[in-house]
Length: 527
Image 1: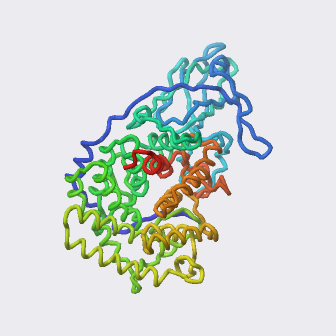
Image 2: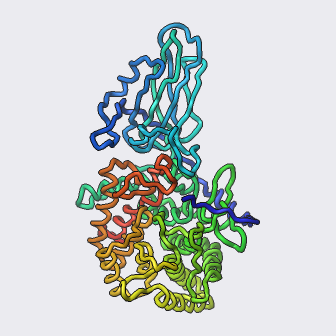
Image 3: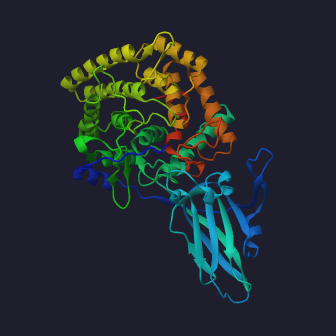
């Protein structure tokens, strides 16, 4: 089902001072050239899963002469984000026609066997990484202008002529990122799978750290507040690029729209511009982003600058309560995210996020000694907790329910635990009960699994949290992940919220947080 927002009478209120601060923090991207490693043959196994059937040194490809309908596949050996260059020449007689060929790039092997002509999702097919190229004169060095996010590449010759064939003499990629992997020291967690999860987490984060913290370098290539919150947390325990986090906060705060609301995401080109999308939970998370940054940097000036924006998001959310003092249920409208789960009702979860973020608001207010705000926030927090239990707690089910159909979901329970509506002992019983009952509306994104792991750790279930990380993110690695994916449902590996998995992102910011958990809670030098 399409999920998007279009706000009527949309107005942008720019804070030029904030935007100037953000521009001054724009990083100079690091460049590193990598070369294609292998030529591969791709096919299907007995379970109809895409596999590599043969592999050869890349020189095997460079020795070939390619004619009409020849197709070759290339493996770069690891995920890359950057600009591809093809060095091309010919064999045979004089080139009497353009060489015409097709390119496709894939973050995972399955994309090499996708039939893109069959795409029927509701997101633009423009996100599929494919190109049709004419080259009039050979030899030529073809530098592709688009930035790609990929490991695998397909080249299919549509046509040459009867008189000449195409030769490939070299394939390389100028990779780009604001950080480099070598700047972070590997840690031995005493388990090869955990070490690999930490590595892939860092790789995922690195690929998404560009001019801003992008949500995904394949798609959407923009900055979402919910992703930023998780990326920044992982960054503080790995690359420690504080300026990039600061830049992103100032961009969001410098581009408010109607009523002082924060946009859920910001487009970065051709200039910074907020999307006309408001998500209640994402806007509220600005208080969390700001406190996390302050605790990592002690940057009091930035806290003072952005404090009002954070607290205003809580004030705005309080206007969306109903007569029962819980967040109004707006049904299927795209008003709150939580997770992509099909049919997930957001009302109880949104109320829990509000309670959770008020706690961060109180902590911000205490740092700045804002006594009036502290009193107001504490009063609202107590009111909301009481209302949440009264409206959403189902004694018979032993769980929180949400919406007119009294839906019980994983997301609702997890957010009520993180909101500390109950004490820790009760929360611990609740999370074990949820695991035993396994509500039908499950988690389907690493984003929601992050909050599940967080809830387990807050309930003093660190070993269980570790096992769940190994089970979920470890299974992604066993499924071939070089970087962690936007959505991963072990029960349906081709699931997509967009109607077709061809536009799913397989390097996605919100999935990078195992490195945050491992380095914060499972190292001797815990902060």
